[in-house]
Amino acid sequence: MFKNIQIKSLLLAAVVFLSSCEKEDPAHIHEGEVITTLEVTVTNQADDSQVIYEFEAEHDDHDNQGNDHGEHEAIELDSNSTYTFEVRFLNESDPDNIEDITVEVIEEADEHQVFFELEGSSITINAASDDHKDSSNNPLHIKTVWETTTAGEVDVIAYLIHEPTSKTGNSRNDFGGSVDAEIEFEAHVEDTP
Image 1 (cartoon, helix red, strand yellow):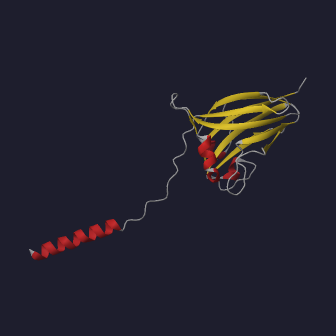
Image 2 (image 1 turned 60 degrees about the vertical axis):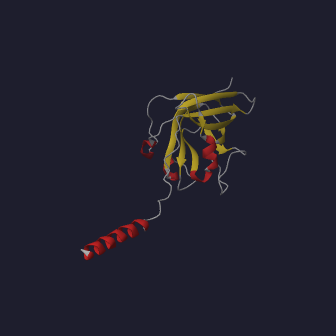
Image 3 (image 1 turned 45 degrees about the vertical axis):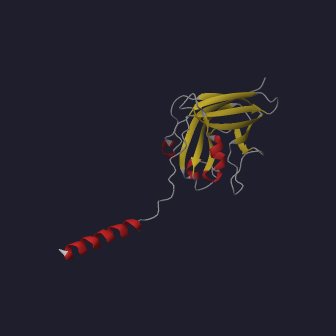
């Protein structure tokens, strides 16, 4: 009987010891910001006129292919013009408590990148001089400058990329990471009268 008590005590001590030697908690796993809406403020630099567009956020990344999925809202631009585009990321799941997720994206600049993928050649995009930057001085592209040339239609997919493996590229695949949110729209560049 004494041996049974000793064996049970040893087993209990082993269980307690093994329990206390568990691995440390794994690193924080990003669950993704809840983003329901992307708000894009378009400012014509010639006259400071503004138009605000709201888009329902998508979250499926289209298998990193940038495929066209139906009709999109259009943003109207003039040819041979310069515009500032500023993006805000919103969580409107509770209409009584709308959250501006943009603040969190900026605070976590090293873990995020906004990328605009264009299909068409009448627009060039550059970071605005007052855009937010990460710790390596890479622009986030929350605020960008769009320069139009000739008239035409340009298909645009805007991505908020989480934990990109690169902060530069010409296509969605160049950035790696995952997508927190994306929108698709058409930029209609019209000849000015």
